[in-house]
Image 1 (tube, rainbow, N blue to C red):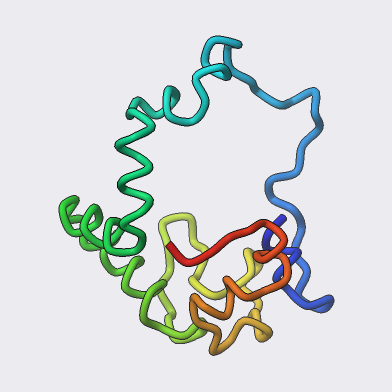
Image 2 (cartoon, helix red, strand yellow; image 1 turned 120 degrees about the vertical axis):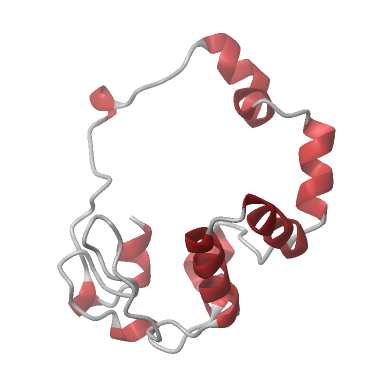
Length: 129
């Protein structure tokens, strides 16, 4: 899991996304052939244009949605250092904490650019939008 890749050895958490290949739910071949664009219902050109706009498009979409929780989460991701929030979510998990509530000290103070620069993110070719 990403949590396991980002956490230090003493901070490893159980993989909450674990499962066997037998449990994998897949779609129909026709859906697979359309790619992501067909599955989410937007034309490829439209999505590529939005992706090219980067972070500004994400901010605009969140602001248009107008959901205070979405906006707060976005501002935290874009502007705040990890470890600076005590927000607790509906599932009982706290921001910047492992599922068991323990501190993720290795992430404290990191900003979005720091996460993007991690080796695991670079291997995945992730970049800031």
